[in-house]
Image 1: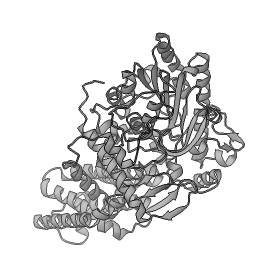
Image 2: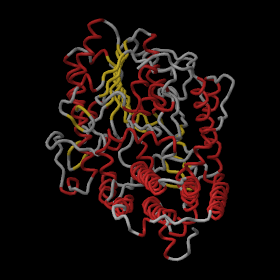
Image 3: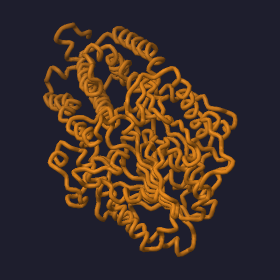
Image 4: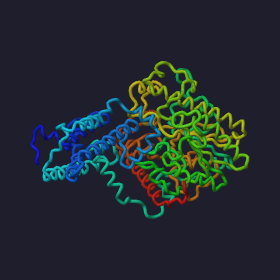
Length: 616
């Protein structure tokens, strides 16, 4: 029977669940976009809900209310997941990133911090509906039937609105997925991106040469590279420091050095103070990948998952060919972010994870940094006794978000403003201080075991702790006060790279660098020629100019060059030294196009790599 208009229409799940999802999308969008209005939600979000629910009405003859309930639960979870992701990364996750929900259990403490009391609204309606379902005669649960012609008309009209919105906005918003989702609706944006990804990509079919990469970057290799082979035959230890930003280096808080051990190390190291994280959505795992392959990450998705079966040319393989034993260490489960597949494909001879390090002195997601370093010494000594040089890669975790270090373990005494419950910055500084102290103990142990003078040590931060666009309240005030200026995007991307080579005088190097440059820089020091191996980074000791694309935390086409960070979406620049903002000029279009070409070539190169035959 056809329904009558009026109060009876509210009995229909079609209307009720559509209203529920409109209110939920309004909640999500008001968190992400401050200028969101109810009418904007109707204009860009409603059509997607009508499409889904019209299909349910037209195809489900039995169990319709259950299908509505499950579908709305899934939509609510997706919208809440997007909101939590946005709070952390200030970016909309596209459909390729939905697999990350499978990793949520490993970072549940971080997720809990990002939830707000108002988020209960995302499931409140479903709780009420479930309770009302127990009342069999409740009129709200009686399914009213709509005309199939009317439903078909709603479906066609909604499809037209969605396609129109996408067509009108995709050209101008293509560089910024978050803005695209704002202008066309979240589900519409996800659907469009899924369709785009399913189509055949335009990748280069011909060979990609290092000469072509160098030509785009303007690189001319010197006749004789400076410092080539100064560390030939020496061991290599690379330490990836969790959430470690450069602003803590050399800085004091309440009269105390935040990183006293690293500050001391700078005197005998090459310190790159304008070094940048270049990660994609894979975060820490992407940092490992970029550092060890000198290839660009993806705009959406983690390299270790999207390309889990590729046979990657890498630093471990270069060093293995030179007679090194290569291994990597991580106190979490190696299956997290598919590392059990990534590590063999990158050529590591062995990996050691939670099974080796155990659950002693757990901080954050695994055994503490102190345990990591202490238990690794035996592995280093074993190689030393064999007389075989080694490459040992460390992935630290103790300074992971939400930066909770056991009371008294960090040794940093903070004033009330930093120690208050509203200050995550205080927790972060304690975590970083703990990380630094663990490094100091590790350095002492390397010296005691006779490893210090025969080992190159490289340390770098994997990614930021505070997003420049979302840090607020007490943390914003304290962070700006600590820096003596406004914390900006250049600070966010800036992580340290510190390379200690035995016998090499220390020097602060102010040139721009990124994680993609680590492989060629270390290869030069170790006297290992890259030959024909494709790499998109450069040797920071021999190339004065640089051009780095930033794919995930800035719109596509954004870059960091020798003097500025350029945002391709708003065409604004931030000067790296003065932190002054300015409008970009046409002169920035050429480097923007160059970084987009480099990113495209990197993806093309990866696509054409053979599949690995190694098993995890």
